[in-house]
Length: 198
Length: 376
Image (cartoon, rainbow over all chains, first blue to last red; front, side):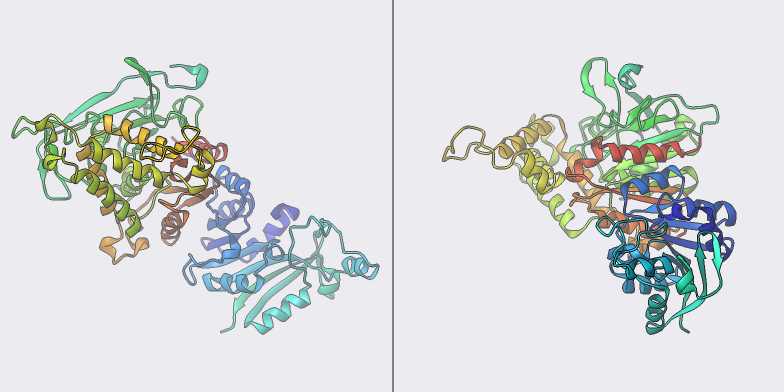
């Protein structure tokens, strides 16, 4: 799913990552983000994906990739090994959202997540008219969507507040434009930098 | 060269003699030894394109192509190695070697013991993975290979690839570790012990000096191989391949073959007992049992792997219960925690442990992609 946003998503994430950091990219697709981070920031990166074609694409891209099922957690990774654990536009595709967030912040000092914001205006309007939203960021029909969790920025922030997850930074986007007012209403994509409560 | 079917074509084994004594891990000093090997492709001027293929329990140096005197004797990993194949001999210089203690021409239990002039038999020392790697390094010296572009192996061969990265970190740039494990489980060792007991208790074993009696412990070897074959296949694949199919139309209410699976195992056992050496089998299973690079690090695999400098590709197969995917993942996590480059692919396959020898398209695409990324 990384390519929905293309380089623009990478630029945002790359700003939060310092040169030489250790980065784990969950749902890494063809490894484009990690390749970008390696080339631009000299990052030591590992991707995780459970799709055979994506694993092959990463190897072709010369990106480290580990084929495991995220639903099984990150139990093989040591506490705090990574500086950043990234999950770009995939959080809504896993069932065990709560556990996975906890795992991301166990193995990483910080987590960076982005997801399509279900609360964006056009999505709310679709629901008001009695239909599930279909948009550029939620391009699927209800019956063929890979997404299994549907949540708004407000929902996500409530979960974080209840689980000791600190919002270090958040950005909202509509297309490639940065949203500054009422993010939950205007942003179609949310990007968060998360940490553990001290 | 036989470009039409991407075969390396006709190949001939070579022999290297080494007369600098080597002290084996078990303490025995071998004053001299021979290794039999084959090569495919050309070593480039920079000597930077050499790939070593390590064999597993019953393999040997004949990795690819065919022998002139026996055109049906195709190399055991011929589907991987050749011009245009995943391990492309137009790019790489590929070396296959029969390990020390083997029975295909390298010094081993069937060779003459210089002290007696008779075959070593059971007096041949137990050799382990470290010894194989050390002797393979002597061969690399002889061939003028300072560092391997890659060392690749499946099963026990994968263990040798791992050992290379630890014993000679500066002499290996990539390791392809396929259907392997960082050490055997109690269950693995148990299977090996049953196989050994089958051989050791065969009345024709004669304490390992069966050659002097003009016999071989064929029954033991046959049982060992039958047991092995059960563990190399998956339950599902056995069900699909044989199910409960009968050899004849009716049950025979006796102890001759009723089911196809019995016939298959007997055939495989007989075939193996006809060409493989029982002492080599014993040695090789011990090498498997003893392999455990983390042993000197309180079982901490990551600490053991800290010496490695290579890039890794680790591959496992979904239905391999002999060396299950979890075991490969242990290696992967150990490498990640050392910040080493590693990719890991878990291939969907019905064929169990034997999958590593097959040419599943995705599996071969993964290997091809990795080999293509190796700079020479």
